[in-house]
Picture 1 (tube, one colour):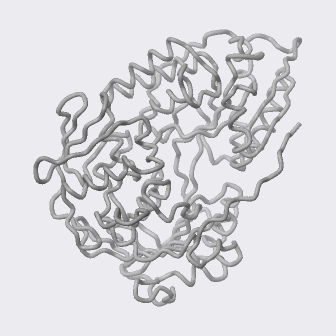
Picture 2 (cartoon, rainbow, N blue to C red):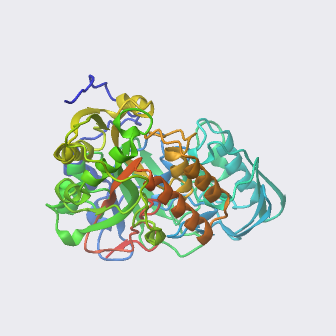
Picture 3 (cartoon, rainbow, N blue to C red):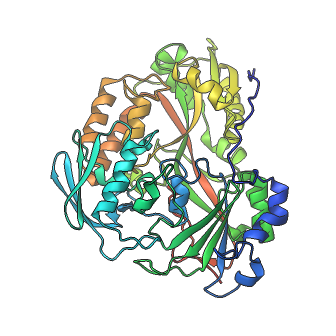
Length: 518
């Protein structure tokens, strides 16, 4: 049975004179109208600039419109990063280890102090010099933002400079992930002028190979190549970004050639697009069934084991995701290549035969991610075939989160990001599976799990920490409090003449200095 409360009116997104465009409008005019725009002529035609030369502009269709006028202290920061507008002191490699960017090196002075050496010869788009004072201004503004960037939740961080070309970052308590935290796009370094007089303004204030020159509400954004870039100059003359919430419209833009790069093509639409234009990228996101260990039938480890044994993720991958997902072998998936080295599981209990007792369970999930109600249907069939009696409860996420966190369901399906802004999965595991975890839907409280998570959290980034995280994952899975089913993929569309677009599992990069249409 499905319980659904009345739908609420969605908030209107603020625009600067332009409403949220519909899929039809986008297909008939938005891409063609913005392709090839420049700062001086924002409505130049596509034909005038989008051709075979390295000076062609790149037309990009994003899934979500800006929610905070492209403020770096919101999730809009990831758009600044994906468009190569703003940069951070460090970036992450595929293992989640910090690598140089605007900082060329760093050292840990003591448990709570880190010193970063800054790159020389960097200019902001507005002509100001990138220096220690600008880093102090930017990072201090982040610590005082309201709401604070989520990467700084629970972190007491101060930034100072006592020598030219270096900054000192101090934390209130030992934090081995300070460099990884500074890789978050929400901690990008903008020109000091961006932080004066109200909301943070990214227009003309980044350091990346592309300069943001105009934003048209929640509809479009215009970027031009920044010829003063400190690194390799951009091959494309600029970027014309459109924000297209409708997945059918994004797929149509790819099919018709009115967009060069398309973010997040829906699974259902990918089948009607030329396969040569589709690129699947593993995401650090796992579709997991959480089982309530505190009350109800799943307090019995043997019943949890029976539920795990009843589930066939391959059927879900094939029938719901049309094969465009990876069957899960653990909480962490192929987006983190090192997770393949996980130790073998040793479940706490053997599965019990529940065919005669036919326990009744409530299975919850939400409608905001289109695939999850379909996953619930598949799970209901599989669990009932094993002997469970299942009642589904499906609502919009805003209406169901409170009940899920309170443990009001026997089982809950969640699509969960397994690495947060630091690029490290330890925080996700602590949040979801520790006794004090703030997102502990399974209500798990196991001292062995808590000890393993605390051990992993104290180890500096690198191979030893990754091994400790995999040991914590093993202990979590041994309890059967969570049954990972599949790892999602992002489906990225690129025209055949596009080269150099990034295919990033963390969705931090997309258009780079190497991206071009030719």
